[in-house]
Length: 251
Image 1 (cartoon, rainbow, N blue to C red):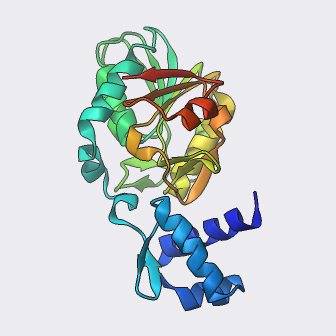
Image 2 (image 1 turned 180 degrees about the horizontal axis):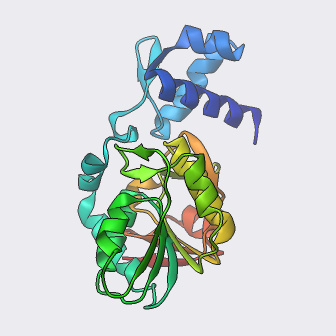
């Protein structure tokens, strides 16, 4: 990673924490000139990562993730199309990890007619959809419940999920960038998914078009860690190249 990329990530991290950050304070904390900060903010704004205001920078409204129910309504039709395409890739009797993202919740709903699944998850919502039906087995991690995400992310959850080696993982993502890879906004979600990327035999990434060319707070994985990408719109040539190693499914 270049010095500029490190600096840009540091800027995003500070803005994520505070909501709004003055140019002067960013320059002081990162030990660079205010002009350097303004140049970096110009790049980040062009990428949609931040919004510039007079003498400061803040997160754009569409970058801040809200409670689970609110995020369910965002681009819901595209997420549901993606979910149906993902469900077609999951065999009856499969051993599958499903994460706690809203797209993954729609995947769980699309899997309701599947039979004899073994589902590993940290999501209460996924468990509600698939548990107790069609001879499915569900392994739900425990720990302290994050009520806004309706999922478990703490160290107990991570330790539990690390014991499993699913043949298939269905994962969502907060942001995708060609230079930074896959990113999330919730540190616990990133930690859980990082474990699964290292354990699953095949990883399906379910990501709608709004996630591309977007910056998140924490890097989760490299683009090369994805085996199958399911999205709702055709990729730009740059992303076709970036995911050349993977199977690409357009829902």
